[in-house]
Image (cartoon, rainbow, N blue to C red; front, top):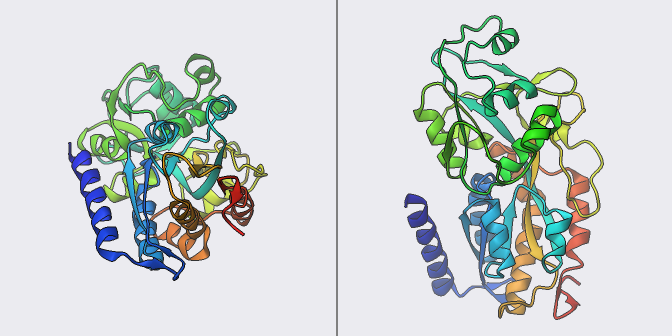
Length: 353
């Protein structure tokens, strides 16, 4: 209920600001009110960057953090200007809807957060994490956990896994990593926005998962790093392909993205083999229709949508990422995205000249 009230208030404020402002963007068009929905993972970054964009351009952005799956559904229903998603659309999903463009907005980390009295540092491997969420490792003092943490006094207590109840890009990133790191997980559960976790407690959104972990002794769960940081929840060092136990940071997330990026920017950077890479790193995207004339949208609204995307790709906006515990996009991702935006049209004519 609190989230719904917050979203309604955000929309109300946004509409009010547009109605009262009536500003003209750079003297070329009236200020617009844009709407988007989707991933909660980048929400702390989006809260800041949307406010900055409004100050720069006069346009206002209302965004509902309803999970990546919900955002994509809203875009499919053509009731939003953009969807936020931590999971890029599959080839099958792309074929089932009108042509879309993926624009990466920042990079971040999914952390394995935990609540253990007196334990301030924990090391975990992909195999062990998979076994915990599969219900095969049930106790904190299991010998497999003890072997990774010989100097840590682990309690003889039952583990309480926490996972997402909603369709979630964060779940996709986490399970995509597990499917690469654990043959057991790949064969029994796989990767997806929604996975049938066999044990544990469900919570909605990154904020919900973080709150349950913070309030539940002996809990462990996956959550966007900013949410763990904001609620002062410790998170584990995770073993990468090179056998390094790594914490997420701007540098270790960026290391995970040091490989090739395809032209459409749809790629996974989990379980990277790069030195120093944090293994549960990800891009997060805004997804927009290539043809912007739909559901009665105006050309000015389409132009404002592209102005928003270009602003997020700007150096000014990317500098914000590290301030809110994300990582900036690599130059190649920004370059490819600017090229892709040139293909966005209104009535078949390119919007960017």
